Length: 301
Image (cartoon, rainbow, N blue to C red):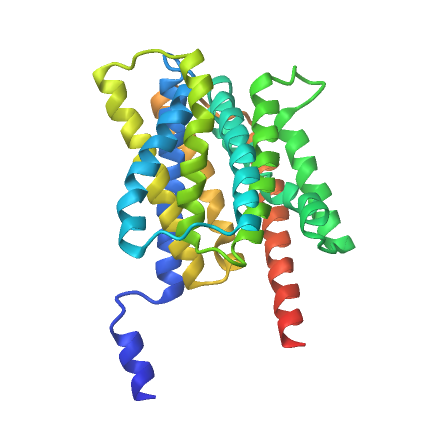
């Protein structure tokens, strides 16, 4: 009893509160980073932005890896790292391009479909069994996507299609991370992702190269910094509590994006964004909680 009190007494915040605050902070960082990418894409190509995001992330992570020690991945993990890097850079290119074509709130709403894509991806890549409830929730979520995109009522834009494709690529990347976490440290996964994605992103960056201005160099650094901070914040939050308990907070990215879009780009979210986002959010939250419950039941057996 005494040791329990001393262990918790040294904490300023309880784990659930700390995790919640970290998740909200992470969402603010991701929304701010997306807004900067949207702004810079007017003069700098998404391919060049992706390259600098990876380079800066790599530079920021090097001292951390130096301190904890480098460990060369075994052959099976190295193959998974390589596949993930290709998928990851494809997702990044598609997402950054979507941000240049699509209103910020709409792009982020469509990005929430990562959780929905995880169902078919988990079946195909991880061999997971998915019941009728999670399939039903996935279908409901994609109905939310149709509400947001309004096919038939308006022309579906290239940016919306790129945002959905990026979400699919992110889901595949996350599935590969699940495989890697069985043998690899989280910090190593993030580091080697940046290490491999940096040269992969160099070629297209050179092809569409524009010399950034002094101010743009600063904003490119901020993008890399925000991305690195956000990934660490999310990793810390997930280490404190179960993922299902903070997944709902991921959807705070939408109000952040709506506010930034309104004040920075004079964008007013369409009336159908909110009900569509609500369906997508409800489906994703249900899927996350259902998966967590099934995992607990499996462990108890």
